[in-house]
Image (cartoon, rainbow, N blue to C red; front, top):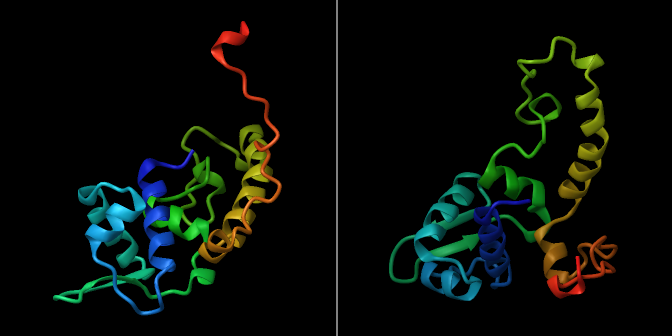
Length: 157
């Protein structure tokens, strides 16, 4: 699962991406429209600013604005900016690789092999999907949960 902080970051970015290019939006408006607590949003916007995704402007007409095009901002980039490395194991991370301390032989590690394929598939999807896709509604046309049957607590389970 993504963190609540990452979810808030996506909400704020989608709000900013919907604004005309170069237009700044004040933090209070972003917080209100995106449903994000203002105090929490300050930290999130700073993280996104440090990663070069958004910019801030001071003054009466100041606020935050996208500096990257929505089509250039991937899910993976935002997740890394907010939550850090996204790999389930440090030994398969592409941006924060570290050998596992408890593993004497990476190539023979069954746990690593078990996660490597699914992670590669997930990473490919995260790097292909962008904010522009979210704005156009093109993300997740084959959502695995859309046909899921929901069972209530009263169904005897």
